[in-house]
Image 1: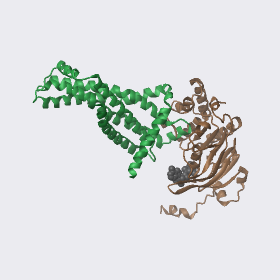
Image 2 (image 1 turned 45 degrees about the horizontal axis):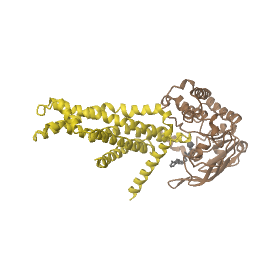
Image 3 (image 1 turned 45 degrees about the vertical axis):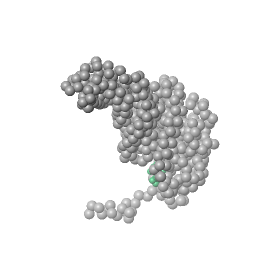
Image 4 (image 1 turned 90 degrees about the vertical axis):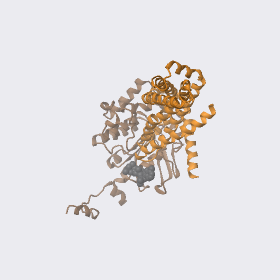
Length: 267
Length: 250
Ligand SMILES: Nc1ncnc2c1ncn2[C@@H]1O[C@H](COP(=O)(O)OP(=O)(O)OP(=O)(O)O)[C@@H](O)[C@H]1O
Ligand SMILES: [Mg+2]
């Protein structure tokens, strides 16, 4: 599929991730407690969990932006914390906030990676970029600057930018959080299609229960920095763990005593 | 003691950043557009203020020396004094200070905001070293632009002095004898020394400003703080280095 991979030892191979006994502390506050799980090569793995449970921090360990306090994260046979690993495994990370290059236009944001790694002529790069923009219905935004985009558009540009990279390992941090349901469905189609046609392993962090349970091969639930459960989606449809059940199917209770003060606010 | 270790640590990290930039020096030809952009930002945008200020520094130098030298009847040496002080000292130092204020602050602000808004993280995950596309073109640009700016500052300062000498009643040295005096005691080496100084200052400024911008941690408030820090550190380095470089070159 791409000339990009010819230079790497893992060219065209799917890679897995193996996380073992990962613990991370920030200023003596433990954010991840002894996290262990594997993502098998070629699968779509969804990581779900409440806000603040440590999902983004976990992803950052996989892309090498954080280093473990103890334990290890390996991508294929390489240590994720080693900067050299990113030269050996092509990975694309869709940041939760997009992390677009604000001084570059949308087009240049997408073209930066292929240009810097010299993956073909300007014409072929153009083709590749326009194709990715088209998939995410962003053709009209190609010339715009990131500051001129809406939140959801930024997220789509970030996903398009990752698509252009043609990675072996695709990491999404909340890909559908700011998107409308149609775009959300498009994202699930993209993730599914990529798995069908390329040697890609996907790790999707999401709050979106239906996305996770529909596309994932396996799902893990993380709560308070601990892995609570790992299994196939069907395991979670009739879970007996009350915390997980409440997370997946929250009960709305407007008589909840926690909100007593709000009720009385207008009196 | 703690500050001393922090200082050494920063110094070492800055050297590492330079080393990593140097490793990508072979990519410079294909980064030509970026290099030109930086030349524009560092050189061209600093040019107006450099011309104006050096003109007035030259003028006031002539004025002051004219005032103090008239008592010794040494007015014919004003050209020499202005010429040498401009090209050996004031030209390079002033250009360095202006580049710090104008371009250095912009460099730190840009890199710091890229850092705070995770753009640097994004570059790392894309396996594009930030040193390659952010530091290297700026270093190359400053090395090209500093001598140019210094030469322009020298010329403006010399002419500023010449005009003052000609039209100030109590000095009234005409332009021809002013420039004759300027040339007589100046050697080509004096100019070269000045340009070398400018080159060293430029290199140090961009290194400091890039390093501080790239090592920012925290939120948007840190962007402003880092710009202040970059300017203060650069100015200290310029003035302290100035002494040692001058001493070494004399
Ligand atoms: N750089 C950091 N320094 C200190 N604490 C941090 C840092 N990054 C994250 N944390 C803490 O780690 C915890 C987990 O954060 P994380 O961003 O991983 O949550 P998350 O699961 O991604 O939540 P969300 O779904 O809201 O994005 C939070 O309590 C957060 O305060
Ligand atoms: Mg998060």
